[in-house]
Picture (cartoon, helix red, strand yellow):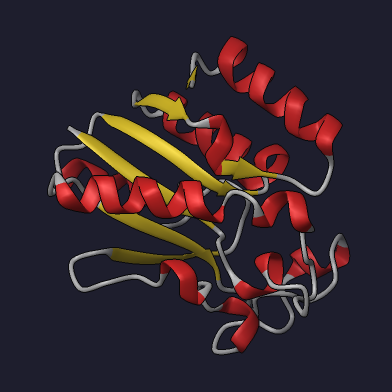
Length: 171
């Protein structure tokens, strides 16, 4: 079975007022992500949101400004694609959505064998989550119009790397 993993479609990344706003190029993926979510829901296939949810003193803030702090507006999913009853929402604190989360257990419980990844940033959380999925034996699919990045070169590199190294099917 397929499962859609929606990565970090949060106010701090996707809204111009967000602390780590990814830019207009990233906002352009919203309609594609929305279409995927609707398709998966209509087929009764799982939709799982994985969302940065940092403590105020998270060590990631040594590399990036404080963002997506638990309980803040910045850590909320953008309203255009808000989770609905039946969707899963999992907090994460690192780039790889499998690292110290329940994602693997949830996917196995739902009998997901093929993970579709969408969201931001292609070169950070999407690519690291693709690695996590690959190393756990999941097939990986990345719809390229449904992933975005603040850096076009890093975005292109990440798509190639996921395809070549993690055997992701980039469509």
